[in-house]
Length: 442
Ligand SMILES: Cc1cc2nc3c(=O)[nH]c(=O)nc-3n(C[C@H](O)[C@H](O)[C@H](O)COP(=O)(O)OP(=O)(O)OC[C@H]3O[C@@H](n4cnc5c(N)ncnc54)[C@H](O)[C@@H]3O)c2cc1C
Image (cartoon, rainbow, N blue to C red; front, side):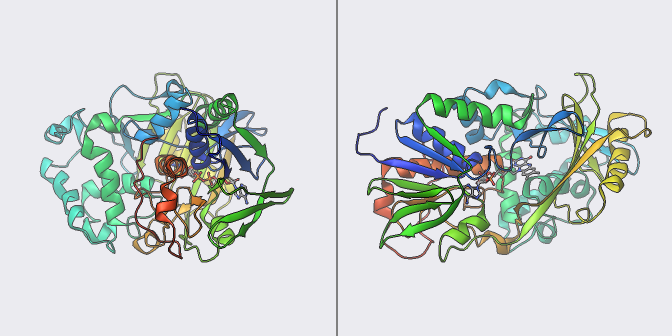
């Protein structure tokens, strides 16, 4: 569909997944799009690069997608990159216990009726079918409850399954993490059956799946991409943004133009007066070991009771991820390398020495802290200015800070810019507005 000639230009600031999703959706709709990105590359917190010391390409951090992440898969379809993901043919989550060396695989069945909990071979060893009912209590949790206020932290199933899933999805400890956000995440995945939980990872790298094909599609559809364009300030008119001031120069906006601000929360708060955003962050530590394994070995393994939490098999590396990694951020890279390798060796049945060359990457502000208090600070996407929209994993998507959340926010911002519902919604000062349907089809 082509837009009317006077539909105006949409300036998208920030080429992370939220900005890319918005840009791809708008260009597909025939809107004129300019994507401004401060860095010399796109992808933000989800990208790949060549590590000269390791001599191979690595991802900034391991990212796991599930087949139920509908917006992310829709985005990959639109940029023609869905086939760049791979994963096991069914929902299968291999685990190893670092203390006992025991291996097991959790295998939810495809359908929504969870008969898998009645099969010992499909569930966590030494647990009973009845134990799997515990998360039902999350439905009654009030918005200020943490996960451990609702689920018993001493239960075997909590330590072997619920806690690893919660920490990975929320990037927040179970003691601090929001029970309602964890419930939402479970409802969108395990609650819909194994078909929605099938794990997916990029065959080559994050950029090859999520970034490069999007830039190519955008260029093909006439979108313009400006790298090295850091937005310094917004010019505010009485009810609309009038100017974008970049370090390299300013752009005056026409009355039909829109701005989608898809920068991280802290930057958005600096640019938009009065904007309240999550202001506490949680780190993720990754360690990439230069080690190739045969194609048949597991795509990933979860580690319980160790230092590593999840280990991913990449083409040229074995890669460790630790979420909510406050306990590791101050420790030295050589120390972490030795500590994590013990778990990698156990998980993939490799020798403990020699330890292969490794790159340790600490993302101190990987995502916002998904605590009940911080969730209250997530803003809506519409603002007090009729032509200014927010996108990013931190806006109020109802999801944790994830690829799925970022892409949903990008699609929703594009939908708002397209159908001009924005005008109908604008008029009240402040940043909190009537909830917007984040799943708007565009
Ligand atoms: C190590 C790590 C592991 C993760 N693992 C997972 C996972 O397994 N599964 C999952 O779903 N999610 C995971 N995530 C979360 C996921 O990566 C993020 O939620 C998502 O990438 C956020 O996208 P975004 O577009 O909202 O923000 P960003 O990626 O931060 O994009 C913002 C962009 O704005 C640009 N920018 C900033 N300031 C300006 C300015 N003034 N002017 C112009 N441009 C500007 C930045 O350079 C950046 O490109 C992980 C994140 C990290 C860091």
